[in-house]
Length: 85
Image 1 (cartoon, rainbow, N blue to C red):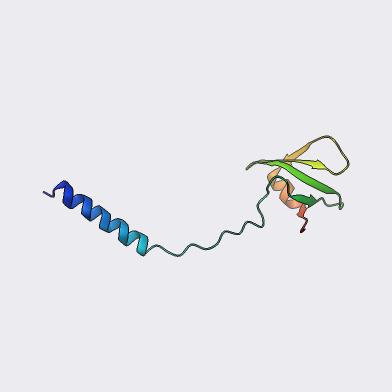
Image 2: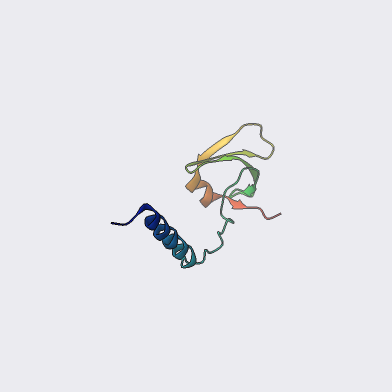
């Protein structure tokens, strides 16, 4: 039977090996991420500003309008294109 000291050192050794042998992480592409404050154009060319975005819904305000609109995230990604500044 192993002692707790032997178990601890074996576990530490396994952790070191796991960290050394892990695959390199690729940089995350965040270009498609919908973030509040970003500006988009709808399919007719009108500007909108994102107010809130969750996994399922996106709230935005159209330029020149005071009301807030909301649509599904999938529909938003299809109908709107990000404006590069």
